[in-house]
Amino acid sequence: MRICEALKSSSNVLSLSEIENPRVDSEILLAETLGKNRSFLLAHNHDSIADSVLSTFFLKVKERSRGKPLQYITGKQEFYGLEFEVSPDVLIPRPETEILVEETLKQISEKPFNLVDVGTGSGCLAVTLATYLPQTQFWAIDLSETALQVAKKNALRHHVTKRIQFLHGNLLNPLHSRVKKDSIDIIICNPPYVSLDELILLQREVKDWEPHLALVGDVSESNIYSRLASQALHWLKPEGILILEIGAGMGGKVCNLFQAPWNLLNVLNDFNGIPRVVVIKKAV
Ligand SMILES: C[S@@+](CC[C@H](N)C(=O)[O-])C[C@H]1O[C@@H](n2cnc3c(N)ncnc32)[C@H](O)[C@@H]1O
Image (cartoon, rainbow, N blue to C red; front, side, top):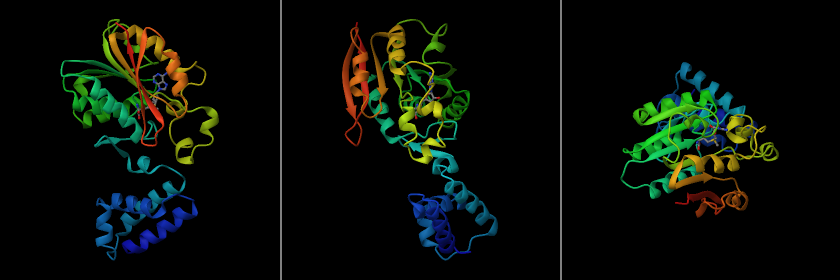
């Protein structure tokens, strides 16, 4: 079969399965299988594909037709210019989460810093920041052991393992016996913030494939933002900063949780103009 024929056939399969961009997804999967980029496909439209490559490609198309996100099939996602390994054990890093990276880089100076990433998932935040901040020491925490395995691989891939301690546990609890009270400069967190009512309305790629612990968290526990607010006060230095991602429409409620001794510094909008990141400072 030729490249053009394979793409036509796979696009039909994906379109029948109501995949949003059947042609683009087909091209990405075929390019990936061939170990080439998408422009190669255009230039070699009439080249024949070996049977073994073809069967691998159609296996991937079948997975995609079941709604599996492309990133879990290719095993990778770009975040802030770096490539991250992803698997169904971790949330696929989103572009709006890059705002947390930018804001953290703005808040930090040249001197050595201590930074905690709560709910590290793929490690996209801690690993990216570690590549930009060679003087900073990181603790990256997650309640999911399997997510931490992925995060560790990403730290290895980007050569920052020496400066990130990966800890298993609930919110900031794993810091006990490892870190002194009032000693952390910055805490960042993109917590699970999807409600159960919202979850069922999400596209199947998200609700059927991404980890529910990353989307809705542990539903038996109370509000994750209020727990973070009280725990972060214990660990942050005076004037330490907490940077949180929030869900659409959560700005008012989350900001209200941070009364004195907190000072609200900023609320940053995402690319759609939705308040997405809250920056709060602990008083002196
Ligand atoms: C929305 S994902 C964020 C992942 C990654 N930081 C990112 O921005 O792509 C939330 C992460 O928090 C973890 N998590 C959920 N509840 C937690 C808790 N109580 N304590 C620690 N981690 C938690 C999940 O396993 C998941 O990896």
